[in-house]
Length: 201
Image (cartoon, rainbow, N blue to C red; front, side, top):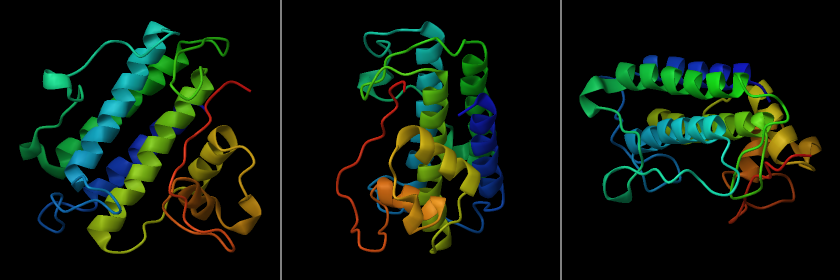
């Protein structure tokens, strides 16, 4: 996947949040299928985008960079008082940061990931995965119904991170939700454990 895919994902979720201002929906409610609140889930996405950008920028190949917030917490938090617009703007900025880091690295660059050393395309796919899957968790909770995801991004993530997916059993969104333990497919129950495969192929 590409830096523009990361931008597309971040902008998609940002616009979805702008369409759901806090005087209409509750960002403190629990995200779909998670223990975190909607707001906390979105902060997790911000943190992943920034940490991935730093990992790519540092080209560290043996471990994650030794960075953490206070008391070992995540690096990135968004001022709760900034509301949906503040979170949307932060998503766009963090997505752009990862996209920019990816854009200046050649395809031959490598960086550590616990599921396998990967390349810029792999880190792009990992960033998109975080945004669209947690975007589904968030929007499904805010709307009390199953959210629609960008099919092109779902298909790209499946191709890069979940090779061999049973794409004949559903839409790209349906298959991605199954691959990430969020849904079922015909003849295949919900997965209790899952992991992406970002290693270079």
